[in-house]
Image (tube, rainbow, N blue to C red; front, side, top):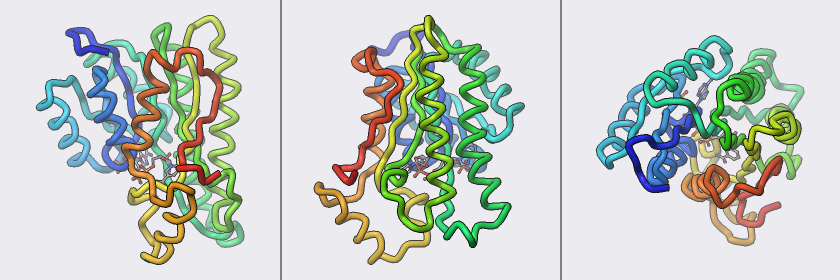
Length: 247
Ligand code: NAP
């Protein structure tokens, strides 16, 4: 898409850092006006918006906890007022707590389901009423769902729910020319993956895929760019694993 005075509008949830920030950068380069959603990192979100604007793009930072239906509704209102009606929704915001199921606290369980599942539900529900015809929705699953590693029961359960949403919601939007897909990354070098791991553990993950490296946020941003763009118009209701061949 070439930049224009009325660019298409994309919301990227959890875009203050990590994969979401790379997705926001990529979609801005693709010509979208981008809403950079964040929950608790205003400085990073504002710095990213300043960078996107300096490069000639249109962008706004919007604070909203995706787990709150009211805040998600207000986020869509703010984006519509500041950038226009939404064409692309990227449901990237997510959290990971790796603990054996038996050691998961109620609070961890609630937080993981509230952000990963309820957060996606909240934005999808708004998108159903508000997305422009011809729009694109990209949800975030994870390759961990295919690996069944100890410690990932709760996280994988949330991503299984996101995959279920993706398959069904694609069908529920029949007649609107809106596609709903999900990307399922393998290990990506962000704080979500790196925090709490030793260098040895990180290297063990890096060696797992046949391409023998960790993924970078840009590896996923390019997949989202494809799914959000015109070339993916016939891809709908699919889960796209991007993991260097890990699973
Ligand atoms: P990250 O570096 O930890 O970044 C997470 C982002 O989500 C931050 O911008 C954070 O914003 C935001 N966020 C967290 N809670 C939020 C909430 N309640 N409302 C709105 N935003 C919220 O994580 P990441 O690695 O980029 O992960 C992005 C997505 O990819 C997640 O869905 C994750 O499950 C998935 N994924 C990641 C990997 C991996 O290896 N990294 C692999 C597979 C799938 P604030 O700082 O403002 O809170």
